[in-house]
Length: 349
Image 1 (cartoon, rainbow, N blue to C red):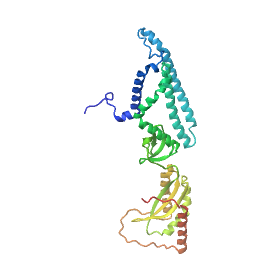
Image 2 (image 1 turned 60 degrees about the vertical axis):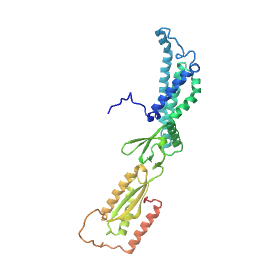
Image 3 (image 1 turned 60 degrees about the horizontal axis):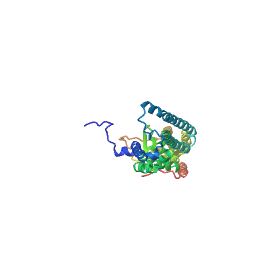
C-alpha cells in the first residue's frame, strides 16, 4: 500500500467542516471579494492598490516599513491585552460553579473578539477600507455559514447550556453513556475527565441527553448477606445499636445510613440493604466504607456472612431463640428505619 504524504493528502468533507477547512474557505472567499471590489476596499494610499514596481526595490521595501511596524505593534498589543484580560477573568473565576462556568465561556469569547479586532486594525494599517469590508461581511457570512453550520450549531448549543444551567464546570455527568467530571465548557466543545484521567471531548451540538449526577445528593448502596440460620431479629437489634457508630466513622455521609430491610432471599443468604445520602464524588468511597464498617460490626457480634462452599453435614437449627419482646423491638426498629428512609429506593429494573 502506498503511503500518502500529509502535503498531498486531499481534504475530506470532515476537514472542510472543521476549523481548518472553514479558515481555508474564508481566506479563499476573502481573496475573491478583495479582488472583485478592490477599488472600493483599497484606498488610493493602500500598498495593495499602488503599483510602484517601477521604483527601485529599496524604495518599495522602505514604503512598507510603517505598515509593518504598525502590524507588529497591533499584534503585540492584542496579545498583551488578551493576556491581561485572561488573567483578570481567571482571578474572578472563583466561588460558585456558575461563576466558574460563565467565566470560562467569557474568556473564550473575549479571545476571539480581540483576534477579530486585531485583524481589522492590521488591515486598516495597510490601507484597507475596513468599513467597506465590514459592510460586505454579510455576503462573506452567508458563504461561510453554508460550510460552518456544525460550528455555529456548537456555539449556539454551548450558549444555551450555560444560560440554561444544564450542567456546570465541576459537575459529574453522564453523556452518551460516558461518566466524567466537566472540566471545561467552551465555544465549540465540552471536556469531561473520568476517574481514570481519560479526557472526552464532545461537540456541544452532539450533546442530546445529559444525566447530571451533581444536582442532588446521590444514594450509596450496601448489600450484606447473612446466614439463613441466624436470627433476623437479633441481627436487626445489632444494626440498631451500631448504626450511629457506622455513621460516625464515615464523615462523607450526609444523611443516613438507613437499614432498608431484607432486599432479597438468595440461594445461600438473606441479603440486607443499607442506604446513605452523599455527594456524587463520594459515592464509591461511602459504599466501600459501609461494606467495611458493617463487616466489622457483624464480626464483633458473631454474625456470619455466608460464602460459596460445599457442606456434607446436615444443617442444624439455630439454638438461640429470641423472646417475643426482643422480636417486637427488632420489628419496631425495622419499621422506623423504613419510615425515615421513605423515598430512597433502588431501581429494580
